[in-house]
Image 1 (cartoon, one colour):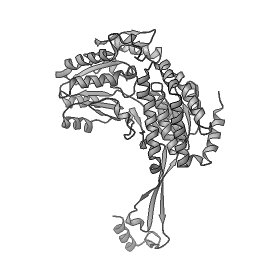
Image 2 (cartoon, one colour):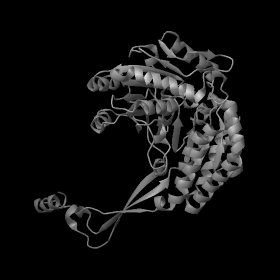
Image 3 (cartoon, helix red, strand yellow):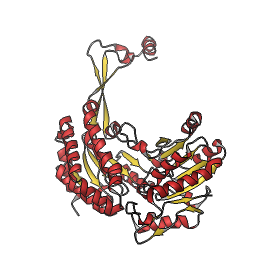
Image 4 (tube, one colour):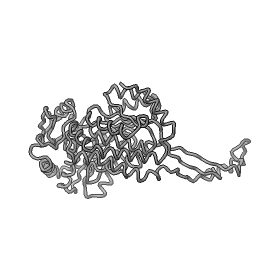
Length: 457
């Protein structure tokens, strides 16, 4: 194992030279990252095929393309983001001006997951570079081929004292978390997120936690059912359901349940054919352990469609469960696989109450043609983010913040929000020497207090 202490110390010395604070330097590094992603595009696609059996189009659409768009957007706007921001001061601070400076935290640790191993590693890195930090990246050991390509890209693009990749298993993660990082960005499960936050607390290190949860998809009786089913099927079974913002379950008005189930089945067959397990473009489950967990969740449920798994290829058919209840085992945890329970509701008030009983989800999706109903749901429920009449796509835009709330995470990123996440806001008040009003100085008096109250109202 590489000596983490030496790597961390070398990175600290490099950061202290202030070279990373130049806007020109940051833009140059972002361009280098862009160049090398494009250079190794074929290797990235091949690695994602080996790790998750992703099709080339899916790999570009959900991984490579998102990162490249993020880089392009960041380079374009970085100069304006980094400018110091003037602030007007209140009358009580007469003859002064305020300024907010954005400065890098220093040495950042980025721990990324296996389900979107390129995107969820390099998108945070774009924000770290934009803000002027140095970074150590710990990619997932469960997507080793993609991790190896990421390591190659980083080594070719950057000096090791600036950005470096540390591959390895949980032992490597534990060793890294012992270091006094200035910021930690973690994407993964709530269980591991708690471990990361506990380790960060020992050094009072701020964190961003991008976690997950059971993201509801609520379908109103006014929804366009065929398009609704098509977009739910896309979002749920993308990457075989191994997406943190995938619809975890459907809550559909009881009057349209049968129609929705019909169209869900229709579009699954339309997307993947009658035999999804033999479709070469349908992703596999990442590990045997996850495969067994998912098959166990199906075992005792009412299967409307699918339900078959192949242990050899680790593929599970897109599976729809009907007549699901809130206390079913499949509703006890985030599914993170191609299983879609369908529950019904009759009254919106009760649907809201049922969702509120559970931890705040990372995403929530609404399908309706009723604006008042949409607003009722959005204003009543707390969740990370979501879509109206679509799934997944809210996380693609660099103009929207992405992140969780409560047990689904803390902090946001993408576009300017990434820059803000990885930047400390340093406030400076500049005061003129004259006039030097004596109200704040001793000796105090009733007269001074009267004037202070006047100024500070």
